[in-house]
Length: 320
Image (cartoon, rainbow, N blue to C red):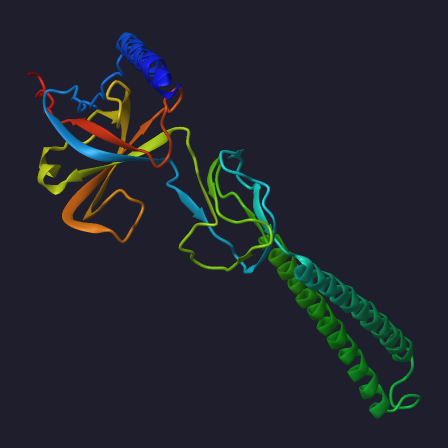
């Protein structure tokens, strides 16, 4: 029995294995090979004479790191990344219960001071009435000089009391206004029209007043966008004011767009590597130029790097 299995079954299995191998090889040969990895070709300048530089897309207001006037617990964040907002729109709100209580106290103090003014004015009116009545009497006979002087002093004291009470009203009103300002500052609002780029806080978190390593809210205006171009100090002499430029998106040299000159920032500074770390520097010094463009229909975002080519050809001489 065992010999029969060896003579019949084993050859059949061997033939089946060979057939499967041949079929698999045939099917594999018919499949299309994967496309080769294409290397991104470097971008080419559209100008005959060019100054090239690295550019960073930014908001036309610069990227605004919004902080908090006061420290406290965040209770509301009504914005999120990508929102278009108007100037004055709330960005986040801190716990306002203590400020509301201070405002209510200040309001009551102003009302109490106003009541003191009414009381002092009523007392002054009574003393003035007494003075007018006794002025009709003959001084020295019906009313002694001492009583007359005391009555005059009482009127003067009444006027001083009214003035002091009004001053207390002014002070209370100022404290009430200060409490209102404090309450209003617990709602941090957008300083400009623009778009929310990053939100780094959530309700329940504690924020502190003053500078922060991570912006609580990052925003900026994006119509138009700006490109900040860094030009090596060795090429600065070749630049000319108002020269046109073109930007090319990294990774796709076919996506390019014209740039409009905005300004040259006339201070040569140490170069920063475009990594977002403001402390990272190299020995090279650069001059920064700012250009603008309309981002409509372009696959570009704030914070994206682009290659920038600036026309360095000298303009023709007048009359030439």
